[in-house]
Amino acid sequence: GYCEIVELLLSRGIDVDLDSAQGTPLHAAAIAKDHDIIKILLEHHADPNKVFGLGYTPLSWAIRAFEPMSREPLECVKLLVKAGADLNFIDFDGGSYVMLAVKFGFPGIMKFLLDAGANPNIPDECGNTPIEVAASKGSRDMVEMLFPLTSPSSTLSDWSIDGIISHVKHFGLKPRDKQKCAKIRAELKQKASEAFKEGKYYVASEMYTGAMAFDPSPDDCATILANRSLSTLRGGNGRAALSDATMCRMARPLWPKACYREGAALMLLKRYERACEAFADGLKLDPTNGDLANALREAQEAAKNARSREK
Image (cartoon, rainbow, N blue to C red; front, side):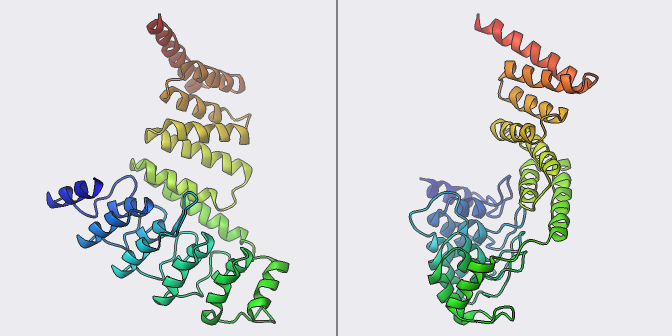
């Protein structure tokens, strides 16, 4: 099985913290919620606090749920905390591990983190605390666990479990600060551009994904999608590149670059006829665009050769 393969590679001297497009082996094991492999890697002194991409650690990946889960990945979290994971690390969007447990609906993980000494008062980038987010999600059990450990808020006249739930129900959570969002978005885009220039295409696409989370304008959203499409294209992921390019065209239907990105993704997927259509659409919008004209000729030639091979 995979455990034996991991043991073999480590016995041959492979670096347990070897960086890859998706982080270290411990990051990958945490994403997969693979308790056994996490245990093996930690026994070989893998770093539980190694930061990757936007600021993801193995513990943040272990807590994040990418699909509905039948049970909480609590055992993975326990292993990482026992190995020395920093309980109060703050994610790129201002979220602590306690906040992540609240957002993903994992009361068992949240209780374990609190019992281990995690700070329940660390707010997110909007200034909302875990207890407020738990109240907004209707998670009374989490509110009850957090209440005795959370510092009272001066903005709430009734500092009680029912008072907190009632306040959030009527007034909602604190909104995002637009200037702060714009600043973080610009920083992430700059980091994405730098990663792209260094050939770190997966990291670049992750940075663009992060930028998308900070309320871009429609035009800025289209630009980010176009850049993320190029990053995933260079990384060899044609499907993801096409998905972003298609959304980009929907966001800015009269933008020639969106057509070019879609055509480039279709070329990688060897869907040459559709690539011709995308490049042709771009040329209609910008008849003097040399890049689009050259791309269309290449697509037409590729489509012609593909038809010849089919005969």
